[in-house]
Image (cartoon, rainbow, N blue to C red; front, top):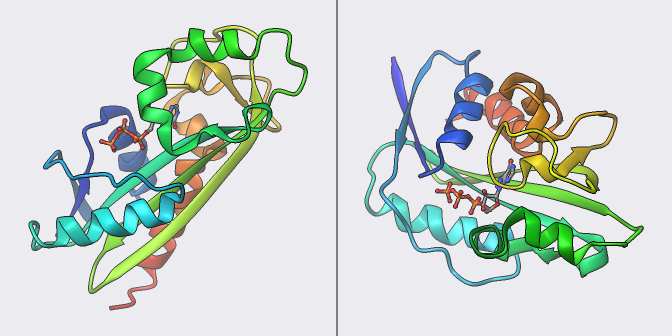
Length: 185
Ligand code: ITT
């Protein structure tokens, strides 16, 4: 069986990817080799740099993924700084920043970078709103404060399978699956 590495330190992401890649006849392996993330405003640029860096170290097909939350009222903040903001002010901090703000539109963007006979990029977006309070405790990161369009529930209130249907990562990984299924070498 063919092996495919997912370079991530985030167990939640790996769980989501494992379910999405089930239709493929491959063995998905999590590895946390660590890689530098350059400071750039464009997620694609960050991911391209990271996959080229990792390709020097891992001589086997792999992918990694970078995502961010973009809040309209905050001029797309935290975007590429999502990790830092989650680790510092967290969900309570975001809710405070949006206290009494009516425009709660936001979106998540996921960029999956595959390295298999060269670099390939797949993008997924999930639009929605930031809730007024913490909802649920499932998932990870911003999940309990993000309600995707066409859903009554936040990501934090969904099972992993449900979240994959609505999420930025689910959408980007769906494109990855289609690409790998097509058997292009
Ligand atoms: P990697 O090892 O894969 O880089 P990470 O947790 O650092 O894992 P990112 O840099 O892609 O992941 O994520 C930036 C931040 O956004 C981080 O704090 C995540 O918890 C959060 N985040 C990413 N995807 C999310 C999702 O689907 N739901 C909620 N929060 C998410």
